[in-house]
Image 1: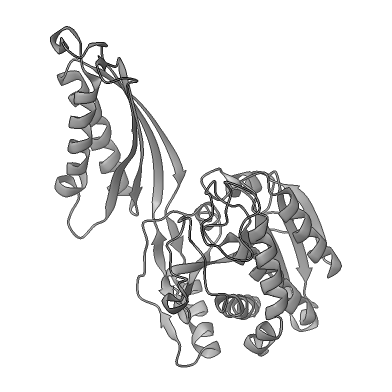
Image 2: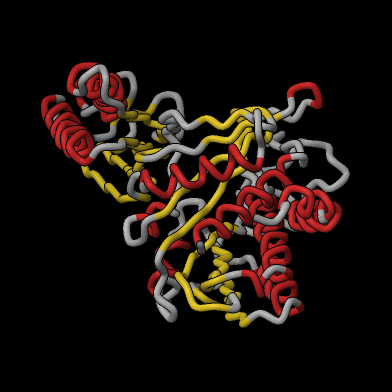
Length: 391
């Protein structure tokens, strides 16, 4: 195995400059035109076979080893979030209201560095590496779009890997586990329909706000009283909108939120109780309810054998390092799950927080930023894991 950590450290300036450039010029899902252009340019410079416009603004590149072998797909996401940045960093967003608040700028820079490193070792490789730079991971269907455009075919993919910088853990920590690691997610919209009227004569109206309040309270009982204590689920109402003025009962209330689960049977139970709770409470209070429920992504489930191999590589690469191979899980969701449903693989986490530098804000926070010491660690582990997979 080449000394990928030393190589990644030698390329740190390259990785950092890319990451900071992407961070300064964030683009929302399916609008990653500038980002995709830089990605395509860097990959073309290496002499790789590059395809653009895959699944919208996605980029795919092929690196052929010197000998035949398996095909491994490696993914990085490119999109930013509609958040106004408050980091004060010298490389802060120049696009008002748009920010890389989840680390996708780091993922893209890491994978370009991995491509550069592995291209230098192409004569030692057996098989093919398919680099997938994905748009619209943040709940917009980017993975599904690239799958529909054939990213898993021509050549057919045998295994897959992806990483995520992780500000819940410090630099030097690696989360690599088999089985479920991120939750499946549904998004919902509830519309409670009543009858509007004057706030001074509520008996002449049918108050959808009161019904909505009862529904919100009851939804919290689904997990508390319908799901076994050793199982996991989340039901969160995150927005509620109704009315325009202080003395008018509105005719309708709209609420949105999310449901998170890991196991299919738990998901089935939660969804069943969710629909009954909403409809029956609304009807019991004289209202009607409409539910729009959409699957955001299934649970992200790693193949245990692939995860074990990545764990072994991490321990070899970082002897004495903090390689967490327990069942580390998060209720966050990830559309890489759609790829893992079709191809065995591993999605792993790279610790990126540094509280001493003030780099520990959570993902999707306006002050999110991470310690760039995570960049060479991520690049080295990904390059080594790919090389091991091709063996």
